[in-house]
Image (cartoon, rainbow, N blue to C red; front, top):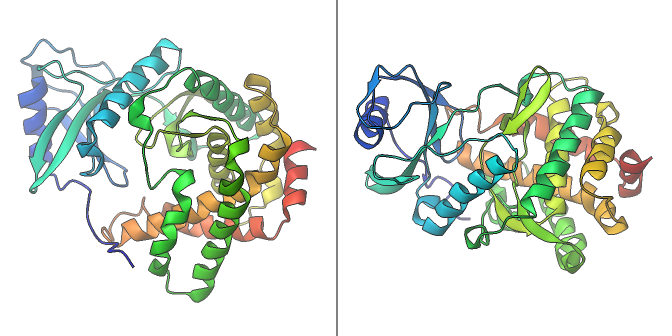
Length: 351
């Protein structure tokens, strides 16, 4: 088994954050609050006392992202992420926009704990995350509409930086099998292996039938910003890849289902799946028969991928409860999903 404790996440303290903000942006004495993250470190900065460079401090604050040591080496990816956020803003999608530093750069590399980490500053996207609200049928339909709209916009953008191999991409899900031993229970290992093998045979081996485009790849409830119970925008383009378009739909629906399973009395039938599908299809296009037939498998595979990678990451940082957020909800959702046959799940989608 590969070493699951290798740390690609930056080691950083608030004094170092303050120094970088001062030296690269001229922002002095801001309030610093650490945000949730997996392999990157994120800090929310507000109320700077002054700034010494001609860089305006955004009214709602900024987020400083210290990018993991792997992605920091991929300069083409970093350029792609900058250009994508600019494209989304021009297209009417509210998202974090880079604040360029005093050198005119959208990011700058720093050596932290003997590793190179790229550091970006984004305008803070003000609002509440969708994870914090009870999702009713109307919100579910709004989410489906938004995913459809985003899909349409992403299809008009491409960049070589997103044509990459990325462990969190659903397309790369089979690669997590080499980490399955992070779970001690043989039953859990067997469940994950069974699901991912099915994904490989039923989806990836038949993927020539699927369209491809740039996709967000992580439309979970923590990355959806709402205001007054309406979806305002998205955050975090760290997992964007060029892959199969249907995967964005599947990943979004997967996290919608897992959000419901935060409730101990949750049932799959409580998720307003049809509302999500209908709204998505109205905004983008109707799903074809093959796409519909693989969604169940894609959702199960994403849960397994998240379970394994979350558990794997937790071995590096036992104090990070956010990393393990999928575990309880994910296993419960996966169990119910596996108890429903594919054709029965199709009925939840289309009837």
